[in-house]
Length: 148
Image 1 (tube, helix red, strand yellow):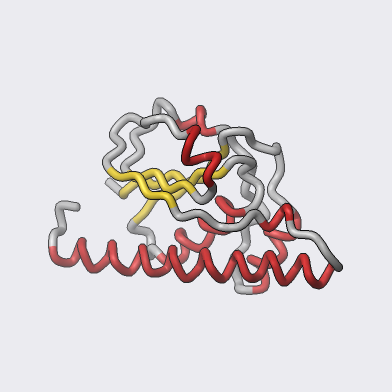
Image 2 (tube, rainbow, N blue to C red):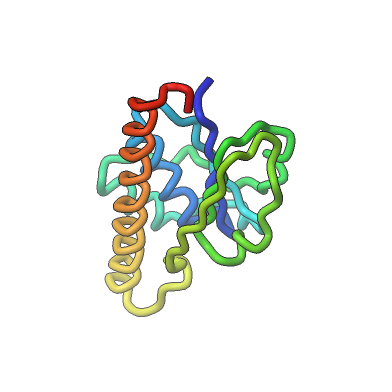
């Protein structure tokens, strides 16, 4: 069985989808990755889709989901990417690990169109750095202990 990871943020419109797309690619299929929100907006932010497309990852088919959709699902690891979701996060069945890595909310960026896009790219790149390192570390740990 694949290691199930749920990535949470408040609105499930930007950060969690960026992380979901990046972790899926970085994990080489060792993870089953989903994302959700404690108060989902109902849509994936178009700029999140755009900045992911720039790095070759298509998240256009993602949908905004409420974290309660996963309460009856065995989740091994929950990763929160914003403080509000970290505080609202319930314990999920089978949950073994919980991590919090907070990132700025690109949906709240202001300025010119280019400044906002640069903000989305910065957050995407920060998420990419952290989640690729997480996937690499997990793969290394599994090579040492295949029972993980």
